[in-house]
Image 1 (cartoon, rainbow, N blue to C red):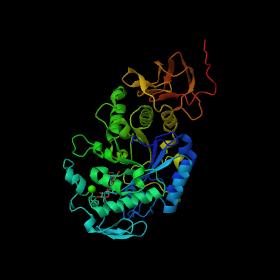
Image 2: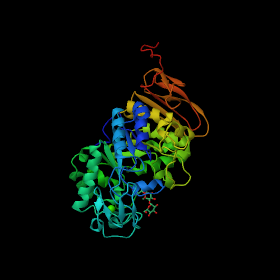
Image 3: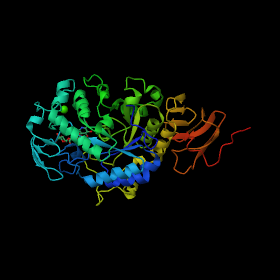
Image 4: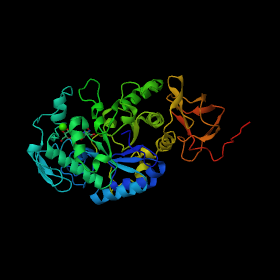
Length: 453
Ligand code: LAG
Ligand code: CA
């Protein structure tokens, strides 16, 4: 496995946090497919506890596909719409645990009590849970990390055959609905061998793309590299490194693929996700222009398979998604800023096309006239320059692009700004905290003279 297989000529995943299935369906058709995204990652689809916080999604009550985000029929219709737009759907699979509650009634009406979940999909009783009932405190202890409770969530005994089969049945059910892959939630808390056994127990799901959410931390016993036997892993070091660099000096990014990270073809990377935008681990939409620069870097630099992130604005980190009566995200919610709709911003959406165009080329001609101005080429397909300073700068860079007049794709959707490449040089004006990105898929209407004199 080497990143998600190309779909829509792309391996880029748009992570759409807490978007409803109906809203994702429309977005696939209108934006994600046309912009060249290969995949959309959606929030957990299974029945969960009731409540207004977003994180109810991460407390499964059963494996029925019936949640605040939509019904089973809506989930299936979303997959069809996305597939028709060329976009594969990756489901967030919460399989390490059930709820952290002593009892209650789930979103779809399933009544449960401590370690008793009636199913029939995701039916569990006390024997199906690990015997360690205390909360994980010491991340230096492998046993505790994998067998005790993550924030009080009842920890499934994934070493048991029945539990493995129940999880495998759930993943196969999602596969039968047409998902393209899975983000395995809290994978660090499931032994890698258990995940391999679960994957082996599936019939269809084993053929899909799996990416493990293993929050790697230096010095901990459980590392993301252990999980490569059953899928790719996220490289959390990447988003942390981007934050450090854009907070300090971006010339340091030159060696980002050379600091003990996962191999590029096995690593999922992101500027942020729903956890890291809440815990200060990475940049977030609140970083404004620097956040956009971080995304431009991620989508232009050849390391890992990138996930862009699109959630909603918040001041309380527990607050659930904004409601608009229909529980949907429409253009109005993007415009108002209630949802960031970051996957639509030119600096992100148009860089998907850049990423797809330069696929397979190497990075060359790294240039760094100052510690916070960098530029590089991607074969003879793409050129990017980033300015992480508070003043505009005009500079001439070496480029391997063919002569021609190129649209700066991060400036707008309509080629309102162009730069001319001539004889391996390009002179660009970089706005404060701004960028220029040129690629052969976005030449200005004029056909470049093949024989300039
Ligand atoms: C994940 N990856 O490993 C998710 O990305 C992350 O968002 C999940 O935590 C976590 N693992 C479990 O799937 C989220 C929230 C937690 C929340 C949890 C369960 O970040 O804050 O815990 O989902 O809903 C909440 C309360 C806890 C409480 C727990 C159980 O915050 O205080 O102990 O619920 O009732
Ligand atoms: Ca566990």
